[in-house]
Length: 363
Image (tube, rainbow, N blue to C red; front, side, top):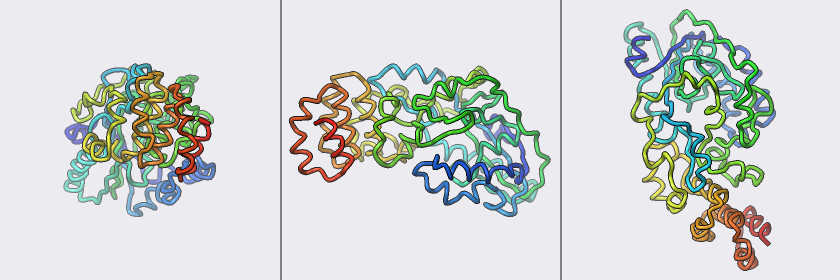
C-alpha cells in the first residue's frame, strides 16, 4: 500500500484472477438483452472481458487501485443554470486514462523488479471488468446504479488494474451496503435502470452524449437538460459521498472554462476550435459534430430565446447531426413559424432521413 500511495493512489485491494466465475453469465445476459446499445466492441470482446485468464492465461492475481477525483462542489448545482453546459466531473480537465496509467506503471514496474513477476496494466480501455474485480478485491461494492461505492472514498474515484503472475493472498470481497436506499435510481433523468443493479446503457445520458454516434432519440432530449457530456446524477446523490474526498491530483481539478461553460460559446466551435479547446481532454473523443449536437439539445432545453440566434447559424451545417438538432432546438425555443417558412425548401434538398424527420415535425 505504501508504494501505491507514493504513486498517488488512495486505496488498493487484491483478488484472484478467477475470483468472479459468475461474470460470463452476467455479461452474456446483459448483452443478450441489447443493453449495450451500439457498443459492439463489448460483444466482440465478451469472452476476454468476462475472464482475466482468457485475456491473459498466465494471470494469477488482480491488483485493483483507486484514485479519487472528487469535485469541490456539488455538480448538481449546475443543472438549473440552463444557459450553461454540464460536463461530467471526471472530464473537466485532463484525460484520466493517461494519468492513471502512468501511476499504474510506476507500481507495476516496482512490483516486477522486486518480485520478478510479469505484469500488465489496464485503465478502462482494455476488455477488463474493473468494477466487479474491485468489489472482489474489497475496494467497495457495485451499488444499485452499477457504479462502485466505497465507504472510504464515496463514489468519485477512478479504477486501474494490474494483472500479475504472482499468487497474492486475496482480500475479502466487499459486502453490499446500499440497504433500502434507492436515491440513485430515482435521480436518473431518463430512467436508465430497469431494476436495481441493472443498467440499460441505451437510456443512459452518459451513453447518449458520449457513445451514441447517431441522432439521439427524441424521447430522451428534454430529460437531458443541459448535460452535454456525461451525467453525474446517480453518483452525486449517493449518501456514501459523505466520505468522498476532493481530488488531490491537480490535473483532476476542473479547468475554469469547463466548470460552467456558456452554451453560446460552445456551440460556435468548429472542428479546429473544438480540437484546440479540448486538447488533452476525454471530451475530444466525441468529435465536434457529436459534441455540438449535445450542446444544441441543451440550447433547446434552455428556455433562453436569445440562444436561438446561435442555433439558426447551424441550420445548414455540414453535419446532419448538427442540422437535425439545430431544427429541434429552434422548435423548442419558439421558432416554429420561421422554421415552417423554410421547411418545404429544406425538405427538397435534404438527404439525411433523420434531418428530414425533424423538418416534417415542424411542418
